[in-house]
Image (cartoon, rainbow, N blue to C red; front, side, top):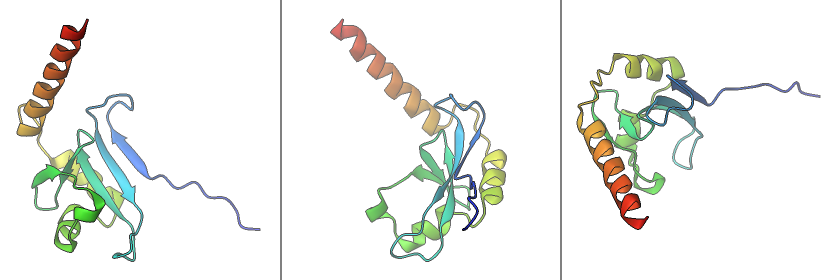
Length: 113
């Protein structure tokens, strides 16, 4: 009988309950890929590329081989290093747009009451 093994598939850099935390997640291999890979997600939503570029994580069917090669890391440690090196001053486009979206939702909720 094989021994059970615990394998982590998600690392949160910061508070586990913080929805804005940076996250490293493991993605299982798909039909087009043989091995799984790790993603570096800024605020749990924006994909950090190996070249420092940032974009929204597309739907799985919209991910091209080129996009996967740029936005997936072979090891979790590499993705964690990339997130730690990323300088987010909370004034970046991602943060501003996320704050604006949250403020708009809060305003809409306030109008409903």
